[in-house]
Amino acid sequence: MKRILVCPVCKSKEVELDAGGYTGKYYCKNCGYVGSFILEMTEGEYREMMEKEKFERKEDEKSKPKGVRED
Image (tube, rainbow, N blue to C red; front, side, top):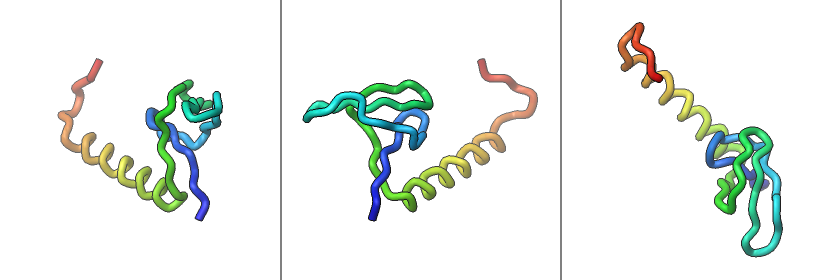
C-alpha cells in the first residue's frame, strides 16, 4: 500500500524532501512549512482525515452565533 506525505499545518499532499539524511527536513509547497515532522498515511486515511475535518468545520459553524466576526 502506497504511503503519502502530508503537511501537518495545512494538510496538503504537496510535500517534498528539502534536506536528506537522518535529520531530513520536509518542505510544503502549499504553505511553506519546513520541518522534520510530517504526516505519513495511506490515501484512504487521508480521505478519512479530510472528511472528518470538513464535518468538524460544519459543526463549528453551526455552533457560532450569526453575525459575529472573529478577528
